[in-house]
Length: 390
Ligand SMILES: [Zn+2]
Ligand SMILES: [Zn+2]
Image (cartoon, rainbow, N blue to C red):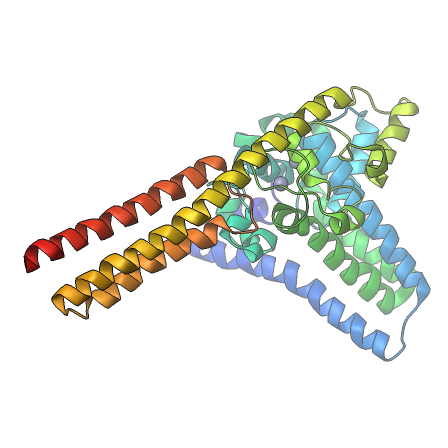
């Protein structure tokens, strides 16, 4: 079966890998570029005062529907099995998700499961450790970042609701552009169609980029996930991303009473009405235990970061002293270049240690041994120079 609306359809058409690559990249350029053209057109329309409140209302309605389809349907229900819903409700929620222009439910879930399996490590499809823009949009351009559904979410290939939405994804995408046109004509198409797609897709991509780079960490996790207030607002709760990585199956991403959001509210109401069952939640005790652990670990990491800063500064001073001594003894000015190389390596380590990105304890220990290696090499060089002169 075709498990991705772009990837699956293309791979099923027997193209050569090169043609496939060109077709695939063109599809992604269209997905990223056309809504951007829509935003620019909307700005020109707004400048000329061609602007209708109804278009904005439809924009907000479609963003809410599509975004909740992704967060409640694709993400919490399908990927993490945070609750169980009957087939008719699953169908509605997943159709809403298909309107977000983020691919089929099965492909989305497989990619996201891969993200959780390798968060901010090799194998993560969209970690900002490879660059912020890679995490936001760049990752979309490499077909290899989309894993096989068969490998990461095989159970979804036997799910008739998922299969139906997968096969009809294009229909729902088209409908989410056609309805705004019916309601508002061309301005409706631009605002509630194209600008809406721009908003919905970028908000989801920001969970991958912004919420793994900026914001606060309440829980200790093995990745760089963070809670970000703005993404939380725009993505109806998905911005509580550190909470989510700490407790992936939890159906509610808000972990405190004031962190309630629209998606949490929707699931709670469905549960109260008996529409969804087996809703996964975390007890306040388990959450507190995890918070205490987070404080302990982040304290240790901060201390190690500080020690490494001092060690790197001291190492730089020693390398400079050793090289200056050797240059003075031999008069060999080419040593200046090599000293620059050693200092550049230490500067690299200092930059990584003070990076705003979260660094794992084990990686920091790696930096400590790298400083030691640079120092040993510089000392050996100084010794060789001294014995050559002697
Ligand atoms: Zn994440
Ligand atoms: Zn997740």
